[in-house]
Image (cartoon, rainbow, N blue to C red; front, side, top):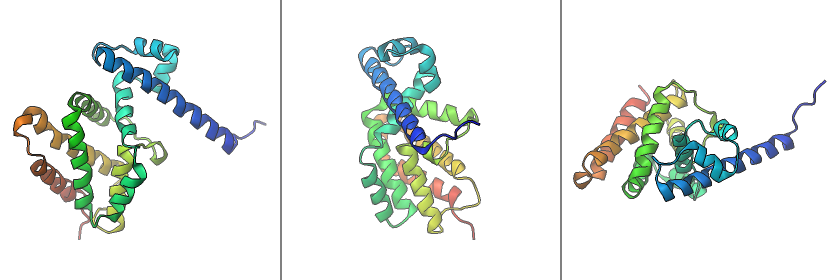
Length: 209
């Protein structure tokens, strides 16, 4: 009779997986910065990380997924401070405004990276790929989930739909706020578009009655 995995074994496997993901991400980002995203191949990333191509594809199906992971992980910095800030704010509107403002500040300073990230995230959503569970969330996903959970606890956000659906709505709102920036950066009014995006999210996610 086979032994059930011990908690320590699972923890060790989790750390090994995280370390490998970080190794791949570091190698890929170095190549993206050196020769550009479009000119970097998955084979080059595997060589840079000194791993087999099969191992790379076990972790990331495409290079866009590596960049998406990089963006997500960048929101893990000061994560505890951000979560506390969200909890200190009075309502869903203020929380969404803070996060969307930070996101758009990043879009403005890293427009190429975020264009690839947003395109990949939307493609992932519409491809009907299943969401990971809460334990698999990182960075930005955790912040979005926190906003939704706090809103549900206060009765502002509906609880009769899956959290994954509300998180998809948040991502679509982010894309809709970012699109006019890419269309016309010189005429982009962040505050105006963020306010409209927040209104749209709240209208779709608010508790009825």
